[in-house]
Length: 370
Image (cartoon, rainbow, N blue to C red; front, side, top):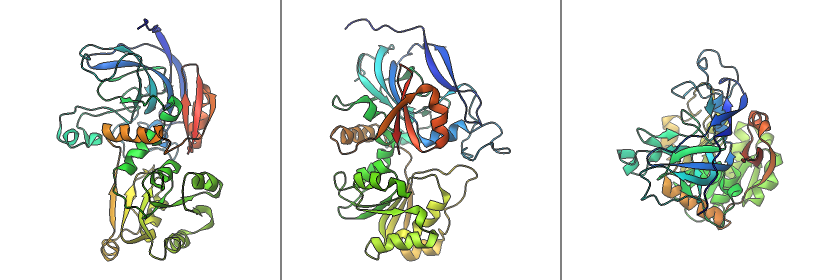
């Protein structure tokens, strides 16, 4: 294999003022991969709404929030100079020591997820619950993320990208992370599920898991949601808390949905979800509202008991989940929608909080509309 030319410095987008929507492009020294690590030349990276929460998480976030996006549940303030991002795809350009038995190699395309690495030995890891590893590294939060041209990552934790899947389509929160949330729950063919995220719609639609999907979003998203496979669509802007639940129950044959997957970071959406369920239904918590934590509105014990309802959650999947989700994408089960912009617009796009962004080594960015 030809020698890979690795520059001494590269570009990275850093959080220069945590607590504000502010990003600065800087030149950094290219890192060396340590034992068990690989150096990846990133070609694309997605932006998730959670990146906004991490950026807004400052040392003063508990007493003087500057904007409403911060996650008060984060244990530590985001450090100045943090490189965000956790949805990266690139090519391995250098292997560290002790990687002789690694299943990846130089020149191979791989992906980086929210969990950038784990120990593989603690009880959560042994049970396939990677998100709860006692020493897990989170990409973009106290671990350099994917908003940069080069990144070091754990050789046995990066995700191989299928040959027939483009890097643009692979570098998605939904392909590497959202899909894990959906895959982790059993669904029976013909069940009616209510969801908001459009790739989750695709995942649950007949081409993915043979469920019947009701998509809930703003009216401008109707065509997108239906194109993704939703059987029904409800415009959230045309209803109040009571009528939207009534509409879901009516649409679902008068019984309600078998499950409601709350993908949005909205306390109001969570409060509405219980009344959308049929008997024995399940609320799946995925989206994490920012600001001061609130309990799920209306989730009284008696109401849960009389409805036989279950409230569960899923953070991210494990390595196997990520591989299987990418296989869905490679087979065309899920598709993406995107446009291209410059890296310098990263902060502007992030402030809208409604899309994912991809930037490549040539300082271009690729957006994915959620």
